[in-house]
Amino acid sequence: MKRLLTAAALSLGLITAGATPRTAQAQDDMMTHVCDSTLIALLYIAEHDYGFVPMSADLSTFEKGQYAPLFEAMMSMMGEEAMMEGDDMMATEEAMMESEEMAETSMMEMVALAPGHVADEDPACTELRTELDAFLFTTLTEGMMMMSDG
Image (cartoon, rainbow, N blue to C red; front, side):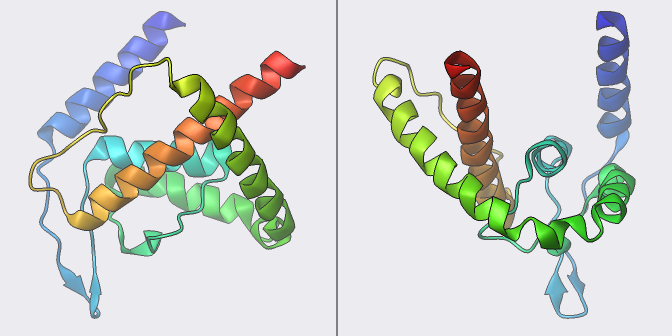
């Protein structure tokens, strides 16, 4: 299994190493934001596995690159499920706020790592990166706490 994951990671690295980033372009008066592949991969994982919904960004304005087919498949599978989850999202946000408070008290003893920084990055990408980082930390911390309680 480790070999398969390593091969997949190397393949992804080779694919993205040859890709040249494009600059943002106007598209029907809507700005397209081109971010790095790692950010878009994290976005996909956060959406697919943890139900991430950004508060500050319109994700349709972000270029998905080689991940576009994954996003399209995810959206087609979600269909009407997304509409029915509105109430669940509010409960999740409340639980996340509670877990943030718990994490803050235990964080006093930990070293805070600096967020990633990409030189000359589109500000919309930086904003999405910051929101994703906070969301994933909160969600993963909440999951860890739930496992230790159960």
